[in-house]
Length: 342
Length: 190
Image 1 (tube, chains in turn brown, orange):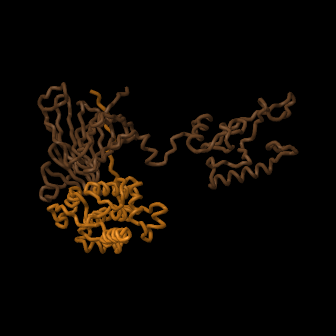
Image 2 (image 1 turned 45 degrees about the vertical axis):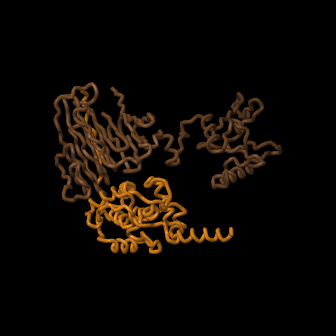
Image 3 (image 1 turned 60 degrees about the vertical axis):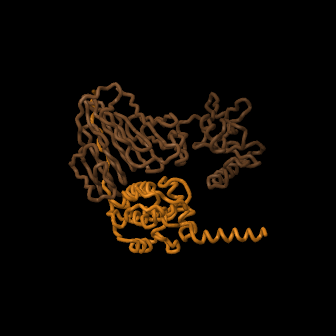
């Protein structure tokens, strides 16, 4: 059974002031989710399962330049709430929060375990992210998982979502949130109330634009699938995006422009051959006065009118092919277009 | 009179440009970066409002080598000149604020980013080398859009180091153990 998983991401973007550094203020354990009894809480500790490079931890109030306070993180070590963790170049650490939650603090990151405890029905985890990248995955466990990553510019909270990532740049308000494997992430902009949904393999940045809106600016991506399009769809895409045109079954352009083949794949021109009762060829079928033409494009004498063939190698090859075809299949005693070679 | 004022304006502009736009960092951080170890230096870098030339060079060398290999500005400048990652003509001063173009040029060298046609043809011998290096990093989303003569904040520098390190790992420029979240555990529906 599929469960709809919604992740609400509240984004707070300051209007006039660059977001301040540091971790957001801790919420006290008493402020549990609305409607849920506070009850007794059990403080838990996360276990470090993998370490690479230089990874250190210190209490939340420790200064970043006080070398005496910072100690190295070790595999098997237990780390509870109220600790900050920093990683250097070529370094990362993976922490396990119980059986269902894994958090990876990637290179050049300063993060903190702000809260980690459980009540009768909920396991609450709050990761503070000052700058850098945090990846996490939360499976559905026996307790309801209340997981969130807090940063000066965005808060990501979810459950039942695997392999999502948040990156924050300190002081500029730049961030991005990605979802790789499973779940559904909803980003909400606190200032404007605008929301954006992120599905697996998508991401959103501080611009809060849908991935499809930013993909075409990020990389040149052809969004049309040439292999599954119908002929009409290919013609429309060709005309509106490439400046070329398509051919109708008669070999004429669909928009009466110069005859050039367009689109990612050549237009398939159906041909019909009539045969006599004896099986002899009776030539091609002429429908409504239009003669079915071969698949090769027919170039008009007036030229291309600058519709996109340009001076590229492909255009030259095409023109050469047209010229050779016209030479080999030149009209026999008539001025009309090419006829089939016998 | 008009000609005189025009000449004076041009002369003043050239004087300002000849002096260069680089200047020392005004705000004192209260910490001498040379006294910090590698981890402390990277944390200090995130705290600074703008990055100096010395800090940038030290950070780039740590990025490239994976560890601290130099002790002071003299060692760093000699090493970077030897590698061809900075040019003597830039006249870099350790206490001056570094510009994005200079940092971008060093990062491109460290990450072995060839760049586009402009960078290969013009930047290779000096004309617009830092400009096109910066444009290349903006294209690759390693740096935010802007101009190559802008300053760099500490937060931006740290973010750049992280992304550049990620790129180097992806390109296999150093041996690295693959790190991942691991297998997703089986869900236990309450």
